[in-house]
Length: 79
Image 1 (cartoon, rainbow, N blue to C red):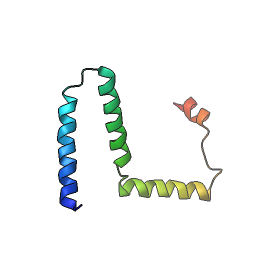
Image 2: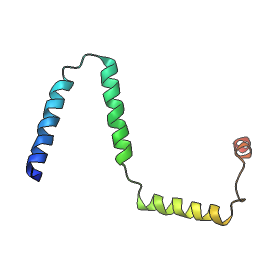
Image 3: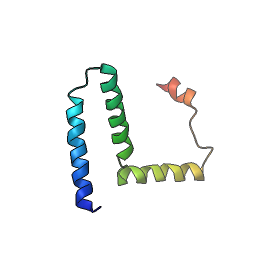
Image 4: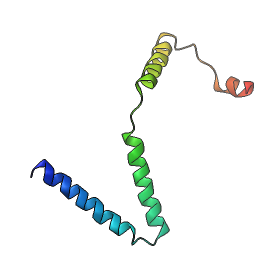
């Protein structure tokens, strides 16, 4: 099977799926499908380079000074 037939099969499956969506009349089925799509979208999102650098910096800081942390109760009290 070549790449073009795989793409066409996927496109045909998408079209067929969309047609089936129009037939759904149960709220819980739609909710479940939306949940699956949301999870897929969240799992496929990438962390930006800037965020990766910030996370790496914070992890390095913690590894170098594991005792230099704030107690959550103290933080909440200050707010």
